[in-house]
Amino acid sequence: MRKHRLICGFLVAGLAMPAVAGTGRDHDIGRIQAATDVFRDIINTPESSIPLNLLQSAQCIAIIPSEVRFAFIFGGNYGKGLMTCRVGEKPSRNWSAPAFVMIGGGSFGFQIGGAATDLILVFRNRNGLTRLLSDKFKIGGDATAAGGPVGRHAEASTDLQLRAQILTYSRSRGLFAGISLNGAVFKPDQDGNVTMYGSDMHSEDILNGKMPAPPEVADLLAEITKYAL
Image (tube, rainbow, N blue to C red; front, side, top):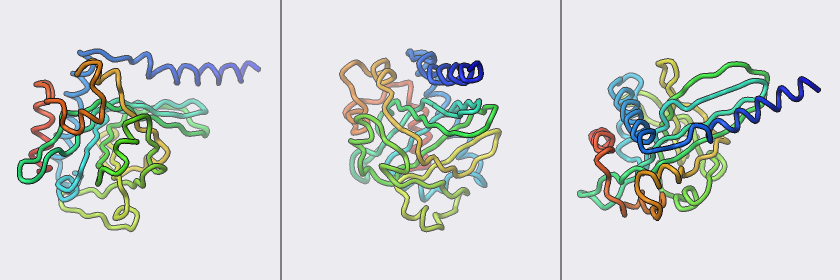
């Protein structure tokens, strides 16, 4: 009985962690800077970078800096970040103001420990974007996903990578590689959007270019635009 209560206690504490993390303007500005640093660090390491051809054909990019993982018998993960999508038509198209997003998932097994991981998701098309941002979206269920190829000039090589709607990457302890995020739930972080943009602004409107980018995201969008024309 005591063991059962202990496990339940850890589960409750784990589930409560995202709520405790909360949001606020300073927190969200910090999240923007962290996302900028993650993208810059990864793209400036050519041998372990996202291939340029995939960035240049991407329709949306999500960056989740330092996703938090926790585990004690039951495991799980959650993280908060930003997502931006292309708006307009060539040659004048650019990247939208970023919407705030969350990702979470769970696993079961005997595991004790934890790690912080940066995530990048490259969306190869905008299919299902409305459904994705209206509530929640299961990676690998509502859209095919695969760990992406690594290297400045690498190309998707496997059938799964070639057919995937989302290519997923992670960086943990300095190592950058494709990762499977199948089963993770991706959804809007409306608290972050409200704090940054106002109460009436939803993720879909932001990503469709209906909101001008605030000064706080200028560095992030400049970095993305530099490599994903």
